[in-house]
Length: 284
Image 1: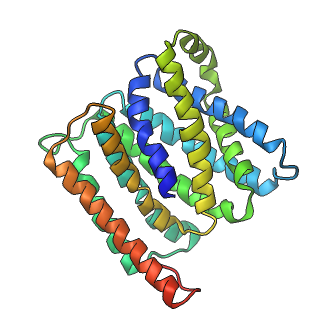
Image 2 (image 1 turned 180 degrees about the vertical axis):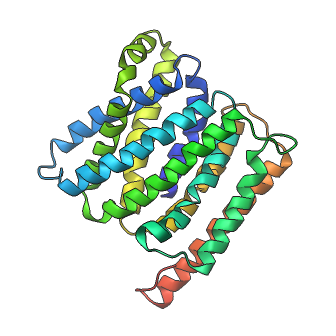
Image 3 (image 1 turned 30 degrees about the vertical axis):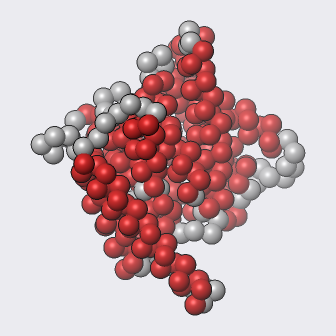
């Protein structure tokens, strides 16, 4: 899950720079059309992987992913990459709360405290000066809530589905949802400069194939609450990429927020590690 958040953390700067040549809908469509083609090749060597569970789970989680990625891309047209990442973190933390009524998985006290600490850390980065929230931030938050529900959906199906098949159906569902934009996306694609093709390639391979598969593999054993908290590492990585590669600058409170997020993850995962050491059947 940490590897997945590292790959996704770099996408915020890449998406921001890609929106100069592609509109948000076209960018998401091209990402997942390319990912679907990659998954189709991978599935050729996995006969029987396309079970009913994989198809149903992939369709549901793909629908939520489509909303999440589209809203996130729209938000990035009006907000910084770092801000987008931290707001996405705030929304995904709700996965642990959504899993309670939807899956019957009540978060432990330690996990609840960790989610609250990470949410506070995220709040230090998500607002504009004066604590105002603009349209870009609102779009990003809507997308983040869709991602939180997607985590819960994956938790429902991942233990019983082939990871490649589930991720492949997810990508196909996203591509089909946005297929009405295919004409405009094709026109914009062929007008991309060489750098635009490289950015799109990263978003396809790292952000839309590898990272989703790693998430699904992780969710075969991790509950949604801990996955939602581990997603909080994504904006920490995004902050590093935004500063080093994206040439963005952030005030001190953003770094304090990153420190609080790291502390929350450290506390919850440290407790989980101690529980495993003392009792193999225990969980956080």
